[in-house]
Image (tube, rainbow, N blue to C red; front, side, top):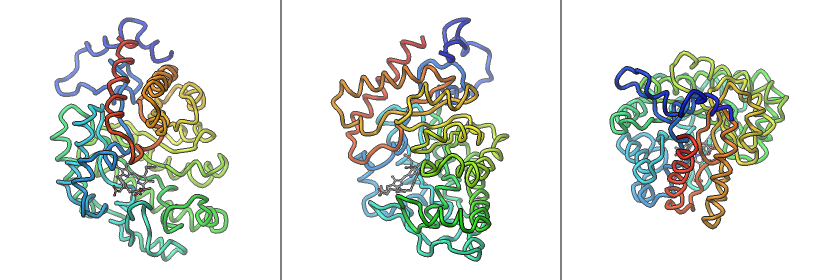
Length: 367
Ligand code: CP3
């Protein structure tokens, strides 16, 4: 109950009464990231903008994924759709982790039902050198879309994001999605200098991409290391952590909370926390009270309803949401989310009900 101890002097909302310059009132989402008392537990969903929404399927009809990421009008509309529909506490910028890599000159496509596919996978140093550093001009459509969104969203915070070096490198080395990450690991073990050169270049690109979003007004950033769970802790520490830490560390002065997320990371939670984020994302396999012991009291947690539970009967969903909220109370701050993205087949009405339930249950216990 560490979070409640902050409110030992009074109700959790009391902190809001403190004088604060106009316009700087922090959202529940940013407060939870910063481990401050909250009026209710904030909730958003990874992949909340996407195929679960009929209005998304309609607006995307006939527009390839990468093209839609480069059109600020479409990005703005798609990002706003789940906010309007579900009343979530944060919007996540509609884009993809491979957008900055494409802007850096890598020939790739996002294939429906498969994911990113790279025409010429990285094999040698010359391939790494072809990946250019990026500037704001290379992703001006991102700068423009974030500014439009911040104006439209009002008090609702916008989360910017990027892929972490390991997950991006995996797509670049494998050439596409991979279960085993065998080629990626072969490069790590067999050509560590090449591996570190590739990750070094990705650190620059990811940092630049996040800085563009921060300068344009996002309220927080999330670093997606979705496939980090494929690694042992020793390999994670040796080959990956320094690069993710370089990205997160370089944003320490940026003034926005940093979230660090991966899947299958039960054994990596402590190390991922050490990489320097303010919030560590947890998948559904580790209860949040157990996760917070591994991560420590310095960081908030985000998660962790199993996305598959969204297909269960409502009473099961309700029980699971209440369990996640109860376990999350052991953390110094909790942002409710799924353990991974919204599956495309999800009934969006279930998501709307989950948002309402999270707000209702958490407002009762925090009030
Ligand atoms: O709502 C949001 O979360 C924001 C949008 C977002 C997308 N991709 C949109 C998208 C975010 C944050 C991402 C990040 C991303 N992209 C990750 C990290 C998060 C994760 O899921 O672990 C990864 C690994 C990718 C790579 C990628 N892009 C995959 C695996 C796929 C799915 C391929 C498919 O068709 O199933 C994509 C494509 C993609 N990115 C879609 C969306 C909405 C689907 C494309 C479509 O609707 O046609």
